[in-house]
Image (cartoon, rainbow, N blue to C red; front, top):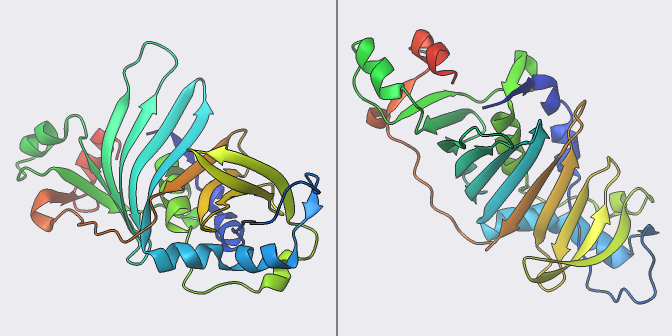
Length: 256
């Protein structure tokens, strides 16, 4: 997976704490850039909490990180237990084949399956066969991180156990940007104070899409949620897993 500085993660906590958006009002008499209304502020304040209350969702995350390469995560997230499962695919603009991994993630760890050469490397070191390699989730304090860490944490952070204060969204930094269709659903689009945008279903007031730039990068990450509801995701078991911390030579050899 492509590497990016861990400084990418520095602003994510503050950015995601402010995520929210939606409107059921008519767009007829509004212009893009208008301040959110008091009713919209109430919805904005509850948006991440509603993700948590609904339990989980399907998601697609896309990051066109450079040189024609796009990393896409497609999977499910359990917001209550903070567990995600996805297929991570890197597409290249040149003749290189897609790079595909099966990943599980929590706030603390990442599991990589489908890693080329894993079986051979384990056998060469006299280790039992395993389908997944686990390593800690990289954080901003640890020096460097792969882009997959950033995307996984963005998804995990799209929920909150409680709502925000609606008054925080009435300071003029949050604006209505119009309406558009996302996967066949009418959505209201809002601009946030840090350059991010959210698109929220006009029918059920749930988050449909979040788009954010990353610090010191020239591309945006787009996260699309659908089918909100309970999810049950089972992490790989210990007998299916080799820990990268226990086998640093294997991890380094495989680039995990």
